Structure formats: structure tokens, C-alpha cells
Amino acid sequence: MKIAISGKGGVGKTTIAALLAQSWVAAGFKVLAIDADPVSSLASALGFPNPDKIVPLSRMNELVEERTGAKPGSFGQMFNLNPHVDDLPDKIAVEHNGIKLIVMGGVKTGGGGCACPESTLIKALVRHIILDRNERIIMDMEAGVEHLGRSTTDAVDCLTTVVEPGMRSIQAARRIKDLANQIGIKRVCAIGNKVASPQDATFITENIDNIKVIGIIPYSNSLKETSNTQEKDERVNKEIDKINLALIPDHQSAKTQR
Image 1: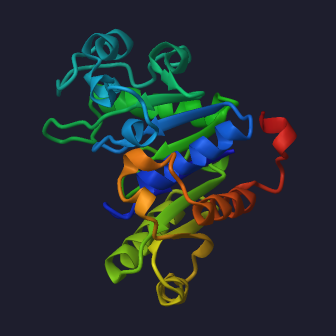
Image 2 (image 1 turned 90 degrees about the vertical axis):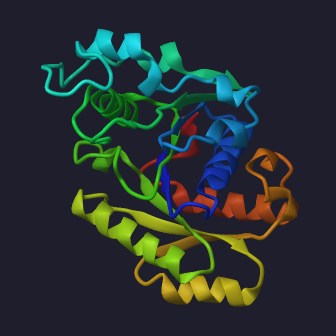
């Protein structure tokens, strides 16, 4: 199962990504988590020690130059658009409590996100992980589909957008669905988060339009900080179990993913 998590900033998508990854490991699956949000915080949410010391791929200057033939931050140079990345997941991933993590990092130079060496290497690695790796994959993204391309859409089991009870969050989910449809992602679903009342849940389900809501995470004091994802209450546990059942593609079984 390969899931991409997106949503407006502040809705709790990193927390949801961490909760799902932890539940998969607890169930005995091999898990590879990808932090593809330029504002990286998945390591902290997963309880990694010293998360600030994890070096993002975009800042591994020697590796970027080795694989692309151009220095990071450079423009107007010729560089390899199809760099070798097959060995990178095992080479650069860090591991804690059974979860392997790769932090992609942001491209902060002028024209960030364009065809620069760092961006090219990141996208090639994401493509390889989504298409060729056999672990359960969860990717924490920014509010968009920047790291996904048409070549990976069939391999993404679901693009999941996290929403909270508020119109800005709902509108962001609609934009994300439009972007996903443009590149051919077939399955887009939503998870409600920070839901403090039945009225909050109703607000999400009635305004989300044509996006299927597969779970509602109740507001929980233990989830105020992303570093507390392992201190879940029973209501959160039950909803995560429900979400996992909804995410499993029809053509896959738990036995084939361990």
C-alpha cells in the first residue's frame, strides 16, 4: 500500500501520516516514510531522536552532484535528468522503532521546484520508491502534488487529503483533488481531523463535495503536539483502524504486503 498525505498547512497531515505509519509497524508491516514537505516535521512526529540532525536529501550536496552531474543551486547547467537512485532508499534512510524515514527537504533557491539538480533527484527518488519498492509507503506532502508525476499515478493507492472543520481547509482539499485529477490520480479521499463535535464532523462531510471521507479523527489533547503521536487515546486508535481498512486497495491483501 502506497499512500500520499496532503492538506492545507496546520490541519495535522503530518500527525495523521505518523499515526498511520506507527499503526502499520505495530501490525507487522515494513514501512518507509517519506517527508516531502519542505517544512519537515515527520521525524519529530515519529519520535526520532535529534530530528533536527537528519540531513534532507536536498542538502546532500555531494550526493546531488554525484548523481546529477551538477552542483545544487546551479541553473543553466547540463545535468542528468534520469539519475541513478535505486540504492538511495537503503543508503540515506534513517530508522527508528521499525520505521525507515527519508527526508527530502525543500528546494529554496530561486525557481524552487523547477528542473534544478536537487528537484530532479528528489522526483527521481520518489518515482523509484512509489513504483519499485515493496514496503508500505507513506508520503507526507505539502498542499499539492508537486513530487508526484504521471508516471507514478497508477502506483499511488490513494491521495489522502486531511481536512479540519473550516472552509479554508475544505477549499484546499478541493484544489488538491483538482490537481490530482489533472495528473491522473484515480483515488482521492479525505480524513477529517481536529473534530471536536458531531457538528464539526457534519460540516466536513457536507462541504467536502465529491471526496469520500474515510475517517474522522476526534480532537485529542494528546495530539496537540505532533511529538505526542504515540500517546493516542482509544478513540483515535479505533478511527485509525477504520481508516486502514478503508485504504486497503481491493487488489491487495495484508498477506502480500508484509
